[in-house]
Image (cartoon, rainbow, N blue to C red; front, side, top):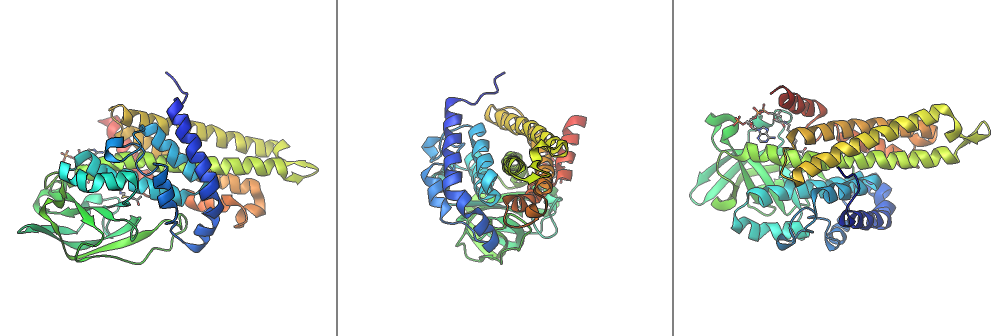
Length: 379
Ligand code: CAA
C-alpha cells in the first residue's frame, strides 16, 4: 500500500494550487458577495486542462487519473467552493454520462468539446417533487417521428444558464417505474428549452443554480443516451462518481478552514499569548485535523476504486457522507476559533461555513448516503 502521490499527481496538485492562489483566491470573496458566476475562469481552467481531468487525451481530456481529479476539486474548494462545484458538476455529471454511455457520434459531437472545456456541461435529474425520491420525476419524453418531445421542469441545476449541454432524465414509459426513465442530451438552444431565474442560496453563491423548463422541447431521436429505460441507472451511476467530486469539494472546504484557523490561532493574542497556546483551541485543532485526514483517506480510496475498476458506490457514499459532515464540523469550529471576527465577511471562514452546508445536501443528502451505505452493507 502506498499513500504517496505519484509524480504526475504531485505536478497536477502544484499546478492547481498555483492557479487557485493566483486566479481564484483573489476573487473568491467578491464573486460570493456579488453572486457572480466566474465565467472568466473557464477559459483559464480549460487552458490548464482542468475541465476534463480524468478523460483520455484523445477525447480532449487531460488523461490523468481519478485521484488527480479529486485533487483538482479539493484544491479549488480550499479557496472557492463555488469554482469547485462548477468544475465537478461539469466533469462528473455533465460529461461522464456521454463518456461512459454515449454513442461514437455523441462522443464525436460533444465529448471533445466538454472534456477540453470548450463546452460546459450540466446534469438535470431533480424536480420540484423528486429530490431524494429521484425516480418520482414528472418530466416526460415522447417519441414523435424523428424527435423526442420533452415536457416538464427541473430544479436546482448546477451550471444552469451557463452550460452548453444538459444531461436530462425524463419518463418515457410511466408504466415501467425506474425502468421507464431515459436520459437525453439537450443543447442549450433546443427549441422549447429555457432556463429560469437563479436561486438565492445560503452558500456557493457564485455557482449558478437554476430551474430548467421544457415546453414541447424538441430534440433529435439520437439524443438519447443508452437505450430507452436505462436513464435511472445511468443517473445513479453518474451520481456515484459525482459524489466523489462533492466529497473532494467538502474536503477542500474543510482544509481551507483549518488553514485559516491555524493561522488565526497563531496570530491572535489574548491573555498575553497567542490563542494557539490554549488547550481549548489545540483540542479543536486536533479534532479538525484528524477528521480531515480520515476524510481524505475515504475520498482518495473512492477515487482509487473508480480508477481501478473496483466497486465504488458504497465508497463514494461513505466518502461524501464523512467529508460533508467533516466540512460542516471543521468550518463551524474554524468560526468558533476566530470568535466575533469569524462571524464577519472579513474572514474566509464565514463563507466556508455557509459553503460547507450544501455538501450535506446535494448529490444526495447525508441521509441518502446512509441509505446507500446501509443497503450495501446489509445486502
Ligand atoms: N448503480 C447502478 N444501479 C443502481 C444504483 C447505482 N448506484 N443505484 C440504484 N440502482 C438501480 C437499482 O439496482 C435498481 O435496479 P433494478 O430495478 O434493476 O434492481 C434501480 O436502480 C432502482 O433502484 P432503487 O430501488 O434503489 O431506487 P430508489 O427509487 O429506491 O432510489 C435512492 C434509491 C438511493 C434513494 C436514489 O433515488 C437516490 O440516489 N436519490 C438521491 C438523488 C440524488 O442524489 N440527487 C442529486 C441530484 S444531482 C445534484 O444534486 C447535482 C448538483 O447540483 C451538483
